[in-house]
Image (cartoon, rainbow, N blue to C red; front, side, top):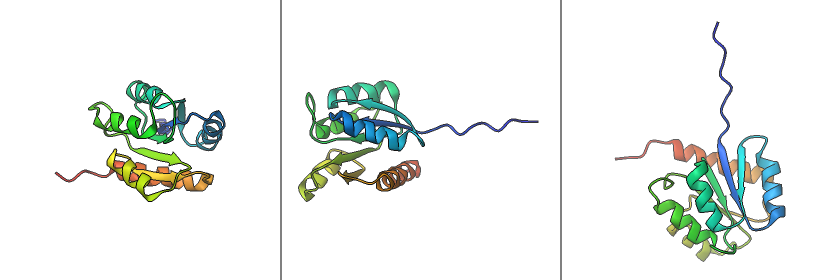
Length: 135
């Protein structure tokens, strides 16, 4: 008799320079995902390369390397370019939404967010990432 394999949790990288935001996001997501954190954009690039998350939640304004730059670096690196990035920021300006899309972000969530909004956006991005790409 074969044993059913437990479902492997998807991996999420939370990138935010605010410890309270990382803690809140971690609490919301850890029930559904394996979660790892980074405190700035430079650390996000390093963790993305070593951890290979299934999705990245990226704050926009951070020290050392901002979220837009980190997103661009991740999306132009052959090893990490397929990882969807969701920008999570308090700035809801249309220009920032466009900039994040130009840098390769898959989605944009404004703070404050509800746990359901965040989970729904992650599910949408993960589902889209699993669709076959047209040739």
